Length: 442
Image 1 (cartoon, helix red, strand yellow):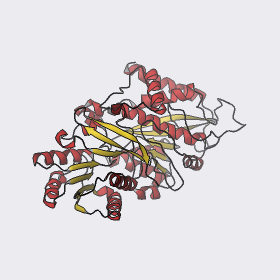
Image 2 (image 1 turned 135 degrees about the vertical axis):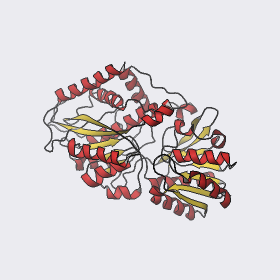
Image 3 (image 1 turned 180 degrees about the vertical axis):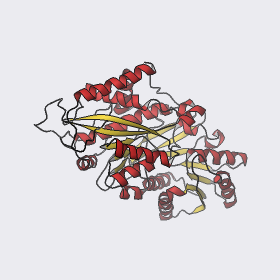
Image 4 (image 1 turned 90 degrees about the horizontal axis):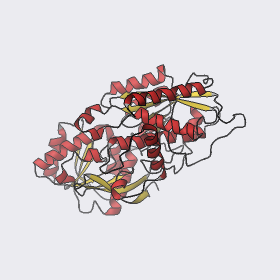
């Protein structure tokens, strides 16, 4: 299917949605959502007053996704594909399988692409969704923290975001903010539990390099280490904005002078690349142990790191990265997502190792949509933002295509608590999954 045909397909689905739509809700909000995976937890809220296929209102759902064009020029594996086509494929599957309309509610997508390095761009998407489009809820694929906080704190619009945020952001954005990944402090607390169980810190002098925008997570990590009697030999912040930081090379020198023989890098992948390149130049080869942080744990990101330093490195992940390299069978949610997209688009999803950004994004899109639909299924036949949030808070052990199982509660809107070990191999330039997921929330 060529690009013109794809655009025509999306347009046709929009016409179908419009033709099926009834009256909007009192606020004028319309919405969209899509997912190729049949919801697997909870039971649909039903009502005798809504006939099968009847449309009583249409909700508009915002979908914010990252512009990765600048990175894709350097390496086409950074491309995340055509996100709007991915969503259209899911929407078509819902209609085909009778999952939409749900409780008399139909959906309409409103898409916005943003530059994740521009706070102004994210704020612009927030304003457009809230004021111009009057969306019911928003889903965002990754790296949308400023936009997500704007929507939840300023406008009281529910947001389901892929990336974990600072723990205080959930309090400030309550009850509207949900994320697939655990909050940043949880990630680092889980990381300490995971590493301690492996004996990874034994006899090590830790060098910690962290982004000042993640101070809460830094403090949580330091506190968790202190509880098990581990001190940090070198604790250095970065105020990096955008791509990398001038401190990336300086930190290497400090780690060397402080005798740090293990590096924990709580910075973006560009700073990790710069840090490791400088380490290689200076002959510094610390043990590397990676948490689930930023977008470091993707094959395409880690391929950019100096391979002589990262070969054999271990990481803690909450995603399913490395399952293809390990020869694991895809879970049913991933199979349904891939099969549906291939049938709809006429294109093949590359289930190969190293894994591409486009394959990962295809699965991310399905996951965001499946969570959205599960919330709407249980939000009643006249859903409000409040009933939608209450329904999301009941999602328990919900299987996803790209991540471990997600659980939300009224007290915890940061989803995945499951982790597993992955190991980097420079021979295949890929992460390989090892063993099963383990729940560390207890």
